[in-house]
Image (cartoon, rainbow, N blue to C red; front, side):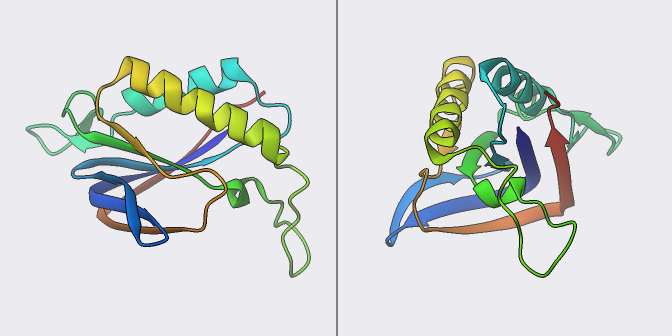
Length: 147
């Protein structure tokens, strides 16, 4: 499972012109589900997302997590993160989970996030989403939980 996290000042997801998720300061995380991923992997990714220290402390060092600053967490499903781009001019989606498993695991991750943290928003699985954000820093990290 892959999480591409971005420290943001604000982020919003729209579907057909309707805002379905929005946060102020916090983390906007694109989520990719790969073949073979399961609930234990989703739990580990969530643990890392909630605890990953990317926000500045008093000395301007990245020592605070999204929970430490009571920031928002916006989870956005994006199967293209699981693409194989190593060769050719077109991505292969063989590494990505099939849509049924991808949706099930994204929903599981979202449910677990909401049960552990009160400031969680999300995009919509399978929808044509318009995502806007202001990356703060910029700060962007690729987190991948191995199988």
